[in-house]
Length: 281
Image 1 (tube, helix red, strand yellow):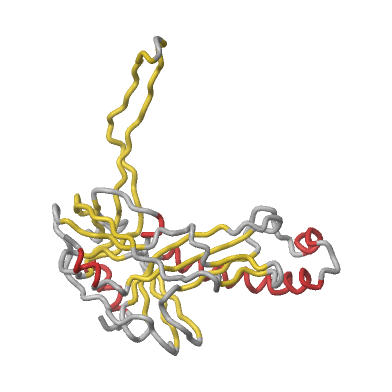
Image 2: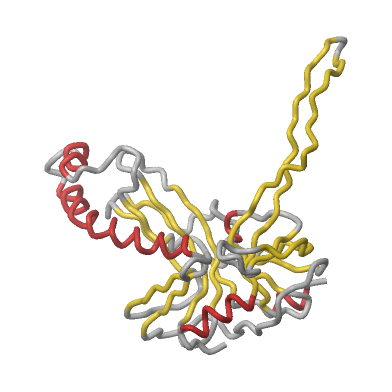
């Protein structure tokens, strides 16, 4: 149903994030998705990705001093972390990488929507944009329409790893980083109102993985018709409280049924956001 449509969506790219805490070398990884809008270096995603970028920059500035002292190894690490008031469970290093997106750039600008979970990243002076197909914009989906969501739910990929010698999280050059996009189909169930009372959101009949957040929603033609921003769990109202016999013993069963539904921003709201910054699409 979506075979040819998915082939047109090479503009959906993975965003990998990883952090570690002071006293544990385990790297905690997560994946998100972004949408390359055009050949000028504009990327559409969610505010969560923006927050990660901003937080990583703040942590990096503090960690540069900490890292110097850790490498010198003149003082026990515990004393160094205490000196810089690093808490036991907070990230001491946080690194992000846009995979297969843009090879090199001189800086970036960040823009967040006033209230919708939409955000833009503008790469300044992009050297090479690793994309040859940009989105063709469609129209808002209709109730009952089958759609496909694309993203990268692969937090287990060791894209970023901790290097004990450099005392830092770095790109894993031993890994061939080219994950496949992961499609999930579903039916548009309802139009939803945003916090301002505008019908900018729609719901899809099943949930998706965390890595799909920021990913594209496409129709059968391969047109971009929205972006997934979250999953909601709705109570079905079907509860089970019963006793059953198993191995000649009475067992009490209690179960509460929830249904996962994907929440997406429609394409007209996305267009309005892009138009505000005069972005071509």
